[in-house]
Image 1 (cartoon, rainbow, N blue to C red):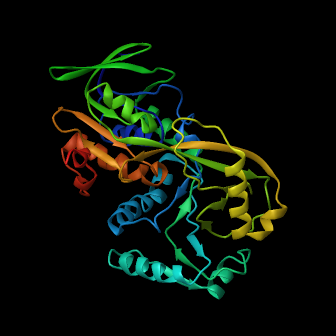
Image 2: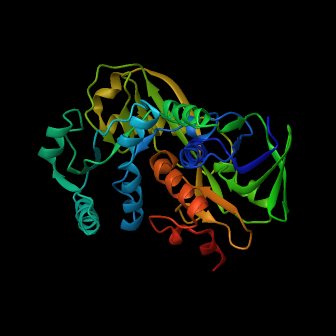
Length: 358
C-alpha cells in the first residue's frame, strides 16, 4: 500500500464512501479511506435506510434532503442496483390537532417546491389499506422511499475501488499531525501522508476532532429496530416508523435513546416498538419477529449536518451527520466540489462547523 495520498478520508461508512466514490469520478489523484473496523459494521449497517424528505424541519433542511433524494435514480444507474425504491412516504396521525400542524408543514414546503398532501382518513386508507382504521389522516409525499444500505455502501466501495481508491480497514487512526502543506495520519497499520484530510467518522467524529484540537459536536443516539419474518407484499409506502423490504421483511422502529455507544437492545423499547407497529398496522400483530438490533446515530448537537472546511486549518474538512443514507449522494457531490473547486454548487454555509463557535 502507498504511504502518500492527495486525499485521505477517515471513515468508510455511507458518507465517507460516497465522498470517496464521487471524488474518484472527478480526479485521478490518489485517495485512501481508513476505517477502524469495516464499512457497514457501524451506523450504515444498522439502519432503516429511508430516503426521507418529508417531515424534516425547517423547510431549508427538507430542501437540502430533497436535492439528495433526487440524485438516487441517477446514482443507481452509475454504481449499480442498490434496491432504491421511491415508494412515497406516509406519516399517519391519529388526532385532529395534528392536522393543523400537517397543513402548516405542507404550506411551508410548498414555498420551496416540495409537494406534500394532507390526506383525509379515507384517502389515507385508500393509499394504505392496512393502516389502522382509527387513523384520522396522514401527510403524503411522493419523493420519499428507501434503499438497501448494504448494497448502497458496497456499490459505493466497488465503484470507488474501480476508480483507484484504496481502503485500509480494521485500521484505527491514533494520531494526526499537521505539517507544512500536509497531514501525517498515524494508524495502527502505519503512517500515511496527505494534502487533504476529511473527517467522516460518523458517531466517532468528536473523538476524531480531538486529534486535531477541533470540537466536532456529534453525540450518539441509539435506535432499536425489529425485523419480522418475510411477509407477502402488503405495504405500499414507506411509513414513518416502518417499511417493508424487498424480501418481504418489515423493519420497525424509530426510538431515540441517549446511551452513548451502547448497542444493546432492551425489552422495554422492543415492547414500545412492537406496540407502535400494531397501532399503525394492526395486522402486524400476527407477524413473527425474527430479529432485533440497534444502531447508533451520529447526531449533531443542533440536529443539522456539519459539512465543509474546518476554519483555521488548511485542507481539513468534516462531513458528519445523521440521515447519512438520505444525504450521502449530495454530500459526496458537494464535498468533491469543495475539495477540487473550492466552492459548492449548492450553498452549505449554514452547515459549517463555525456555527458552533458563536
